[in-house]
Image (cartoon, rainbow, N blue to C red):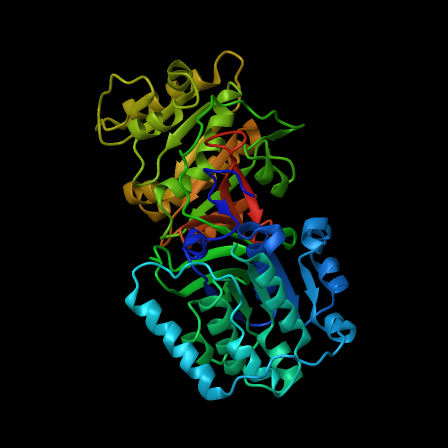
Length: 510
C-alpha cells in the first residue's frame, strides 16, 4: 500500500469509495489488449479485498503464466486467491444435482420480488445466510460450469461476510460454454451481487461490446494516449453508481507489474523538512532530485546550459515541483543564483517558497532576482534594474554577480525565464543574450537553467544550444516530465513522502 500524502496511489479514490459502500457492487473493466485490465483487476483484489474472502478466476491464462507476468503474486496469500478455470474444469467430478431445477418463470418471479424489496427499502437487505442460485440453476440446465459452481460455494462459505471475485474474462467463460455474455453477467449480477452482497469485477475482452455496461454497477475503461511519440496510459471512470466522480480520468502506470494511478499533485502536503543538499559528483551539479540526476548522467555538467520547457496547461505548483529542488540544492551547496524569473513568478513569492526549507539569511545571501520595473528596493535579494540609465543598470547587474561569486570566484547559476527576456527586449536581443550567456557559462563553469514557455520566437535556437532539454507537462492533474535531449520516456512527478516536501520522485509511465 502507498503511504499517505503521496499523489502516487494504487487505486483511484472513487473506485475505493464505490466498493466501500454497503451491499454488493459489480465493476466492468474494459480496454484494448495490453491496456492493463488484468493488472488493475489483480490490484483491486490485493488492495480492497479480504485475503480469505476473495478469488481471481482466470479463464485466459494459467496460474504459472500469471506468476511469470506478475511475480508479486507468488506471495502465499495471493497464490491462494488464484483460480485457474481450465484446471478446475479438468479436476472437477461431475456429480448430479440433487435439487429439482427451477423453471424460468419461477426464476423471474423471485428476481422481481427481490428487486421490489430493494426499491422500497432505504436500508440494504440484511446479509444473506445462503447464496442465491436462482439464475445459475437455469444456466446449469444446459451445461455444468464447475468453476462458477465453486465460486458460488466459496462465497456461501464466507457469508455473512462479503467476498470479492474477479472474473477474467467474461468471454473466456461464455465461449467455453456457448452462452451469451449478457446471460452470464445477468446471472452473476442477480445471484451474487444483488442476492448475496458480493463484489464482482468483470474483465471484458471485446471493447466494442456495450450492452453489458447497462447490467453492471460500474464501468471503467483503460486506454492509451500518445505524447511526442511517447505512450501514456489512463483509466477513465465512465460509471460508478452511487459514487460522485470528482476526477473522470487518471494517469496510470504499470511499472513493475503493478497498477498505480496518480492523484492531483500538491507540492506542500505532508511533512516539510529543512533541505539537505545532495552532494555533487565529479564535475557535475546535483539537481537535488535523485531520479533526475540519473536521467542526465549524474547531474548537470559544470559549464552546461539546460532547458526546461513548461507546457501551457502546467500550473505554477506543478512547474515548481522540478524547479524548487534544483534551486534549493544549488543554494544549499553554498553557491549563488542569478535569476530573471518567468512570467507569473515574483521575487517575494519565490522567497516565501524557498525559506520554508532554508534559512532566511541563506536565501538573502545566495540569490539575486532581476526586477526591471522598480528603480530601488530595500530587499537585498532584489536587483532594481528599472532605472533609465543603462550604465547604472549594468553596474548593478555586475556588482550583484560579483557578490554572488565572492572572493573565491565561485560558480553561479544563471536562471532565466526567456518569456520575460523576450517580452522586455524582443526576440533578436533575447537570442543574442542566450548566445552570450552560453559562451560565458562554458568558460566559467557556471550552470545555466533556461525556462521556456510555448510560443516564444527563440525556442528552436535554445533547443539547438541546450545540453539537456526537458519538458514538463500535466496529464490528468499530474505533472510529468520527459527528456527531449537526452530522449527519455515520460515520468510522473510524485511526492517523496519519506524525505518530505519538496522532495520528489519520478515514476516511469509504462
